[in-house]
Length: 259
Ligand code: SAM
Image (cartoon, rainbow, N blue to C red; front, side, top):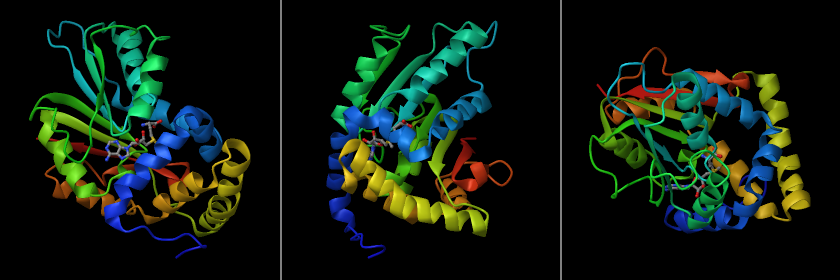
């Protein structure tokens, strides 16, 4: 145990994760803002701009996006908005996949107030990201996952699946909490996350345990280099060092290309 939190056996993890996200689904947006002090919005925006996706002028082919662990749809709507506003792309498609039907329901509800309401271009799909058996091999151009993969029971299986569903030339992009690259800042960050966060979770969402789980899952996630090597292991070409740190490594974006 660390800081009084019991380590959960792997086989119970999927159940636990399901419970955590069912219990936070309706409070999810608040939770994100609390967890990251609002910074997750900037990180997501940065990811979307970095990818700069959208049908280029004269390109006949729409892009097929897959946002895994897509939850309430932040990344999915953001990618579609970027493609539409910057490239006039009104054709590319989006699948939002998540293991949790409550999170998907929140996403579908939010979709109603976007330009993609009732559009056949966007689909919400209940899927385990480790297998994704409803998604064909070599069928997607862009695979995104934000703050989702650390919840997978088998992270490598998730990466292998990302490789499977992408077309050759397709891009894998992962935004995830990571390791702070400065000792002093890390000390402050650890103190914040292990004491203050669960307390804030309790006060704001009356749900200390879920927040405690989230803190623990961040601590256990592989560091930037290890995660980059897992992406390579799945078969991806990893450009440069493979990642970009955000806010001193509190979060990082990892990129892989299926050649
Ligand atoms: N991507 C969204 C965002 O950035 O706001 C949601 C992130 S939320 C912290 C994590 C999501 O991962 C939850 O919706 C949860 O249901 C989903 N999740 C956890 N394990 C999963 C799995 N094995 N397959 C697919 N989704 C999973």
